[in-house]
Image (tube, rainbow, N blue to C red; front, side, top):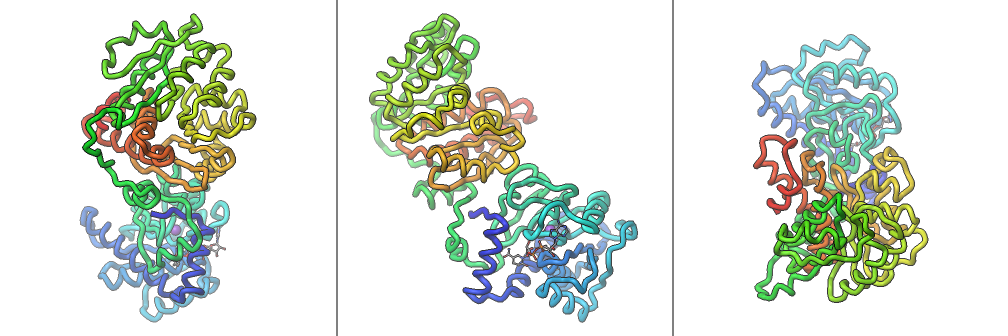
Length: 512
Ligand SMILES: NC(=O)C1=CN([C@@H]2O[C@H](COP(=O)(O)OP(=O)(O)OC[C@H]3O[C@@H](n4cnc5c(N)ncnc54)[C@H](O)[C@@H]3O)[C@@H](O)[C@H]2O)[C@H](O)CC1
Ligand SMILES: [K+]
């Protein structure tokens, strides 16, 4: 499922109308009718209040046009609708003006917005057709006042295409912004509907086809998709769940090397190692500081444990790099970072692994902080084997030398630029994790829940991604599918809990 920006949507619209020849009015008719269908289904599901009319807030552009068409189809369905023009209706776009004239001929009630004069209690719900993908900046008057009044009315709002006041390209919300119960977006979902806080103000999003052929999207090489089983098939040619061949030898399912844990954080290594196995890899060798070996022996009998040279403070020491490089022989992946801690010579240590090990690397947690602080991505040579980075927003801020706000402002664009610039696979975690690949493809993950924002959840994800690489998936596929599986397992684990607050990282592993 493609995810588009406003600019891409505009180009696709134009191509469909001009080059394919589907008239704009047909697209608008389909959009408005799809909106009316969604409103009708919402109305039927809501407690059957006295059948009150819906009020359609109409902007000047084609989003407004969609709203006028929706009002007409609602009336056809026996649901009364009234048009409230935000501004004088003689300044409508031509496609919207055509709809205005049709609505007038059909005597659909309409009025012009005057601040404070709308009797909101007369209505059962609001259709937001003020601003769509043509929005530039924060809503200006009188849209701003109308948006505030609509939000304050307490009535359910169904937004057309995007909630008015949402930045459709990033997920930022301007002030004010419509808070919708549902959003009916047209043709393809928009980036801003997938990332918070946009995803919050959009409510439940339905993508309504309006007659734009997929060929139009591939014409403009849209490279952002929602993670889904269809995506796995389309991009990676993989089925989900992954078929498990009938090979009998454990070696077939790969051997992962995990470098994790320190005296203070042995649990992180345990979680990551267990996740490697639970996600299907045949073997995992967990390298930890020697001191830790006795503490964890027996905690995970299925894992091969290796005590490496340690620095006497409960961390691996810089000298352990050579041991790790030797152990990497025959492994399909090395995952470095969960619970690693910081230690003297850490940059030299990581550089040695970066240079000498020839298998893919998955770097997480403190491995990312070491990389950020020594400028590795800017200074070290690109590796032949792929690198997967799995930062949360704070780690990403350090890696990209940005503030947390700047990281979260436009996650998709930042992740894509970073992955292309450094030739890495970037898993930018957080609600709706963004996975960006060196070739510019980006997948947005929709599984998972707030209960997963707990200590250890990231360690589990690192284990899952390493496991899938060990089983033979490309690092890109392992990152996209691993994030999806991690979120799905978290959603399944949640069904066994009474509240998201009680979810533990270990529950995610058990639900894999
Ligand atoms: N996706 C599709 O295939 C179709 C989408 N349609 C609808 O068309 C809108 C986009 O229409 P457009 O005319 O380009 O822009 P808008 O309707 O979003 O509004 C632009 C309108 O509003 C003014 N404006 C812009 N920014 C602000 C602001 N911050 N404050 C106040 N006013 C603002 C601007 O001057 C314009 O007049 C899309 O979302 C769909 O709903 C087609 O109808 C069907 C095909
Ligand atoms: K809207």
